[in-house]
Length: 185
Image: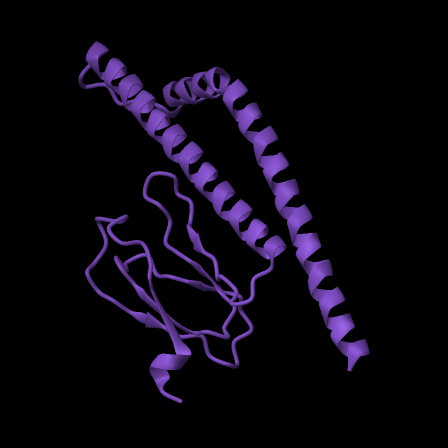
């Protein structure tokens, strides 16, 4: 059997990370490895992930520079059931929602933080900003965004419970299928 028939090549990330090196590395999952995920090093711009078709792994990428979240490339099973498809889609949708929330939140935080620092420096250009002054900003930012965080947490719990529900369903589905095969033969 040719090596090309037995390997999936997936390009991960594209131009999403502009400030990383141009090096390309190949990661392989060895038979002795028990992991279900392969971290992709931070310095890779467009790593090529090489996996055999029968390897059921999720590839975890470098943190996004704005949201600080690590994206996950989920494995699509060859004979994926409707429940497994729904689980994977729910996981991807939740990851995208989470990425968008934290990217927007962190942009807002950094902008307001810089505005606060600029305001203090306008008052006194030679001033050294103290941790106490910054703590005023942090408290104000948290107070102003309290409702947003509560709403986020509620939605996060709902989404995670849905993912848990689908995970339990796929687990049961898998074991029922294996029991049926055992008793039919």
